[in-house]
Image (cartoon, rainbow, N blue to C red; front, side, top):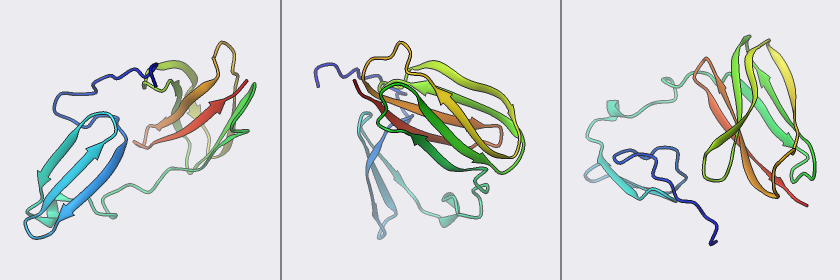
Length: 147
């Protein structure tokens, strides 16, 4: 809409953008990535070693990610499970990707955690809650607050 704020993430990188299209051409290894807000990128993959395989990706140390109720009128609960004790940062961002609230920043033990997120000071709209772990995991959930 007219209230959309467009922010360039990086001149030569995809950054933190939604990828709408991912197309490959096996004949010459061409990879084309179309993003929602940051343009189109291409690369030529000439060696399978250039690709990350499932074995290269660390076992996901966060699971059962959930936000409820969603949509919410007042408070919502951010629930997740950690596979091991570690430092965790949970941040709220607006639709433009600007961080405005830290929900948690510190160590948490292994197991299921529930963090209460108050709507306080937020207009109705779409917001994002992202969890970052010291193991390198980053996962995001969208929350919609309604009047």
